[in-house]
Length: 236
Image (cartoon, rainbow, N blue to C red; front, side, top):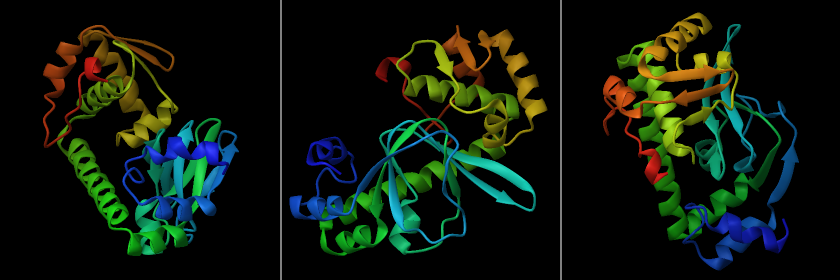
């Protein structure tokens, strides 16, 4: 990586407070690469050699077993993925592939573990990020198990709207079959849920959803901090 590319990465919560020597040590072996869409980056079961940071684009984390495949998560900028495997020097539990043209930073996992042992601020940041990932996993599991497929779709759209810069438009970054997999439903159930949302002010056009009545959707979903709260779109 070139030195002029470092400041953007320095702003990630994982690296913001670590010592300059620790950051330089991590950056000395870092790679910045651009990948085209649908490139496999990681295969589950393989050893973790790098910690990945998404700078631009998007990455799908997925798992396959016995002829079945499911979308686990979508990683957007600026975020890391496969942190737990990098810390534990363990096999990856998920595969990863690019959704579109994507810029990634690859940090050697061995360097990550070395700095983890020597830099207290970095250790604290790693613990915090892993804790947030764990809580996100619990929340997502509760969302799948305790909400109907229709409610899960509504919650997903509200969450994506809160993360966007739009007041009413959500554009899917993944195919609808991948969205159905992520939400724990069949493509047929997703189609029925999309149709049902029309009565709650949601208009669809291909991969784009227009939400005309956010309050109505929130009443339907009943978000809460123990099952999936999100900021309002006004707060970003």
